[in-house]
Image (cartoon, rainbow, N blue to C red; front, side, top):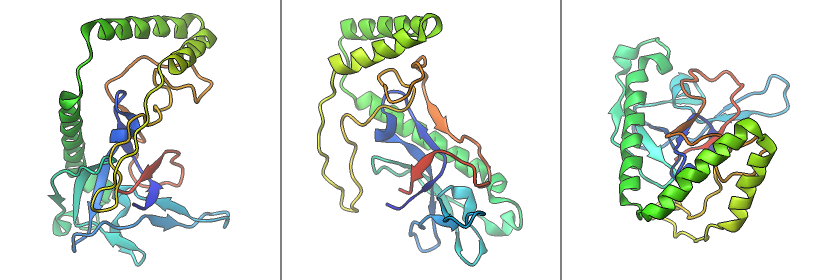
Length: 222
């Protein structure tokens, strides 16, 4: 798996264990590596893996033949072929928006299946967690520092067991139990800002469009 900046999707519950993105396939069925953009300062290039940069309009940029949803767990969705006769000279991010949206829906369905297969929590635990979320949300508004401390106490009191995952046949690793929580989630203490209320999904650079050299979220090519 190569690395490059691109838009990713995560859920509050699964975090980076099931981070999704729009993946690219070339005409021969292979996955392209990231595209490197030269820095204006000359200090080094920028590696980008956003699907919309693969328009083949530069000698160093491959042309995408299909898009598909991919997940950090190794799952991949169905392929959506790109009709370049129809796309013509249009910007790929606009011309293939429907295919990219279909990829996101496929990933939504994938995470729904993952959640359905997850071990159910006892009702008493579910009620306690909901009450805890409500209290931390209240603290976030009235006493932000106390909210951060409460999240840290929760992290210390309820450590998540670690498990080493076996690699797949392609060399990609499977989901790892106890992946670091995404920034701003209930159990994250990696930032100085207080936790935010639980939401169903979080995004990085949603609908960012063409690469402009200013994205801040790192992603990986699956």
